[in-house]
Structures are given as structure tokens and as C-alpha cells.
Length: 370
Image (cartoon, rainbow, N blue to C red; front, side, top):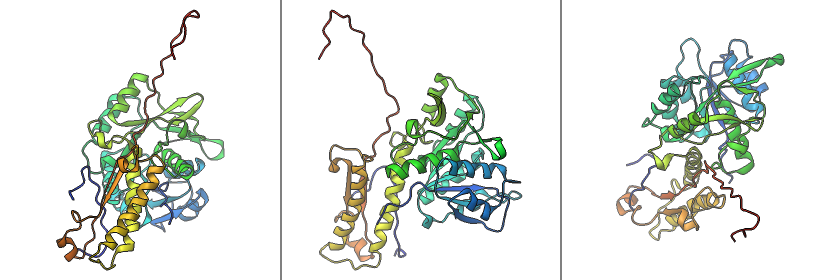
């Protein structure tokens, strides 16, 4: 017999058979200068200072949080990492599932073990990961870093970012920070405006307004190779610095999990479905199927909202998603066991990554084709 509660399982192929939660939240792990509090939610740099201390002794974490809020990130959960005996997994575990969806990052920690710990946390909690690559201009080293994450638990919910970036620091100084806190803020800013996690916080929607410069430059050929491998890069363009990638670290062969914004949509639907399903725990299962139909309607309503935002792909809603609570998934055995089952199938809208325009110069005496 199952324990009371709700289970959400995300799969590539389904078995036979209020208000949106805040997807713009950041979950940040790092060493802090004050150690009286292990985990807390903060909404400004001042709140961070009050809870976790000043910059001295924990500059990288402080500067990363400062960049997050300067780029208009709004909510950050902070989990303190003990600098003497650091345990990233233990710090991640403080981010309880009940805190909701969001982006998880350990700014500046490029160790493969840390990347895997963050990905495992995201796989368990259905959040998404913003990972930092080493601050290097060596495409081979960066390719090795991203390909090393292929097939890892949670890779379908992770993105790896480079290079690092120069930001304004305290007292008219400049500081160098990894890209992950910037990307977390760009995502928060985009979600607050669009309410659509499938819109990539990249390109014109991913402008880092406070960034001064990138620490590394790459050729177009290098960018193409790294992007195809699954590394997301920031890029200077038209006088701005912007995020210019939207891939997961699942790898190019994982075509169903290629786009990072799609992973964020699945995250959002999973959390909202969980919240909706909680309303059905301990309700009576009637023989007429009314309870199943009500749950199906609630889950379909969630999907319809994302379809209307364009996040789910199809000419019609029926093409884009399907919710099934019928007899194929709610069998007599599951009913006898006090279980309610639902299968939600969705098609997420791909990200436009490449635009090709053909310009044809026509002689003046030749008529233009209609």
C-alpha cells in the first residue's frame, strides 16, 4: 500500500493506459561570512547581508548574490556552505521540495562532483540547474566538461554556462563572477514579465544590463562547436552582453531534452500538477468516476494555460497535450489500493536557435516574384 501523498514521475514515454508557482526563484549555495543561519529566503542584498553577513571573507558568494539582485532577480533561497568542511549535497538538501520550483546554482564551483550533486538534487526535486564552467578560453576543456555530464542523473534539467563576467563591485571597483547568478536573474526577470518559462532568457530577452565585460572571447566556429555540445555561452553583441544559449547538458543525441526552456516548462507543470493533486488526497473515490474527471479537468486546465502561452506545441490543444485518468490508468487494483493515477502527455515548443535570411538583389528591369 502506498503512503498518503502525491507522486509526480517525469518520463519520455508515458505508460499505457490559484496562481502559478514562482518559477523565477533562485536556490544558491555558497560560503558566507556569517554562520548563524544555514538556510533562508532573501529578497535583496540588504536582507542577505543581515542574515549571512558582509562581503569580507566570502567575496565570491556576496558578489554573485549582488549581481543576481542588480539584474532584478527577486527571490533567492540561500544555503550556507561551510568553508572548512564543505558538503555541497548537504547544503542542497536544505532546499526542501516545499520551497517550490526554481534554478539551483553553486556559483563558481566548476568541480564535476559539484555539478553532479546539483543535477541529482534537481532530478529529485524537479528543479533546474545552472552550472558554471571553468573560466577558460580553451574549447577542448569546455567540451570535455559538458560531455562529461551526458547521461548523468538529472542532466535533462541542467545547463552549463561560460564564460565568466566582469561586474561593478563595491566602492567603484570591478569584480569577476561566474555567469550562473546572472542567468538566474535573467530568468527571474523574464518569468516575471512573460509568465512563460519556455521563453528563453537569452538573446534580446537575456541582456545583462550591469555586466561590463566577458573574461573570454570565442570564435564563431568555437561557439558553434560548443553550443552543439550543449554548452551555453554569453556573448557581446551590439554593445550589450547577453546570454546566447538554451541547451541542456543531456547532449545533442537526447533530442527530447535538447532545450533548457523546455525543461523549465516541465518543471513548472510538475509543480503545479503536484499542487493541484494535493486537493484530491483523502477524497473518496466514487464509482461514477467523478473524482477522476475532476482531477483530469484541473490538470488539463494547467496544460491549457501553457498551451495558450505557446509553451506547448500543436495546432490545437488536442495536438499539444493530453490528460488521461481513464480506466487504463485507474484500474480496479489501483482503486482498491486507494490510489488515483493520471498521465499527462505534453509536447513542448522548441527554441528558435538559428535564423537564416536570404537577400536577393534583383536587376531593375526584372519584375519581383510575387
